[in-house]
Amino acid sequence: MIEVTLLGTGSPIPDPQRAGPSTLVRAGGQILLVDCGRGVLQRAAAVGVMANALTALLVTHLHSDHIADLGDVLITRWVSTFRPDPAPLPIIGPPGTAATVEATLAAFGADIGYRIAHHADLTQPPAVAVYEHTEGTVWDHNGVRVLVAPTDHRPVSPTIAFRVQHDGVSVVLAGDTVPCNSLDRLTAGADALVHTVIRKDLLNAVPLQRMRDICDYHSSVEEAASTAARARVATLVLTHCVPPIAPGQEEAWRACAAAHFDGRIELGPDLHRIEVQRTT
Ligand SMILES: [Zn+2]
Ligand SMILES: [Zn+2]
Image (cartoon, rainbow, N blue to C red; front, side, top):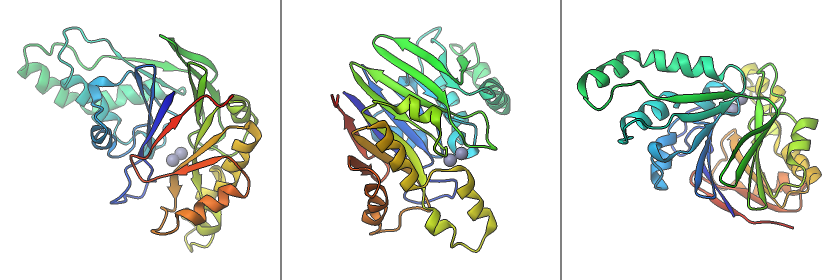
């Protein structure tokens, strides 16, 4: 079984009910955090996961809403890990991730200096191990394997999707992307697909070109559902819904997906949890 928890289902616009994009994947005792949007550690705390318990951080791309709380994850993990010589936090993302992590640590340089000066047992800055990939197997430890493939979120590039595999169960986390062959190949035969989605019908009616621009490089609910159908997954999980799902509109969103995909459709509030079992 792989457990998926939608920590944050929101978008770049602050929302009192929804944290920024972030998904927790638990498999084989490992805790993988996929993206780290606004409020991620508060939501993780709500399901009993602290920063010091994360096995690895997976980053789909470097858009601000997906990495807004990267600094919080790095610093909070550092100050709340009490083992001497803690292992570095593995961070897997597309090229550009290492520079972003380095710049984030530099931005918190004053804080890091204060804490090293104050606590005798904190002698080193936060330890990280950054791996930049766009393709292939990027993680293979204790029965949990993670594969990545490029996605298409241009002009944001490179961007990647993740496939987490454990004990015969596979979950794909697509991130932000339009439909593309490499995502199809990564998703083929998986049990669940977690996909960020927008409602192009609603956004195209907004009299702000900057809002309509969003349609260029995201999948609509219908497109994500078609990707799920082509891959023959059993479960489609919608997240990062733009515009935010208005109260009472959940079924309308679900219907957009159901027109193109006849499997299980999950779209929840923050902290919605999905157990993914082996389908075949
Ligand atoms: Zn994005
Ligand atoms: Zn996004």
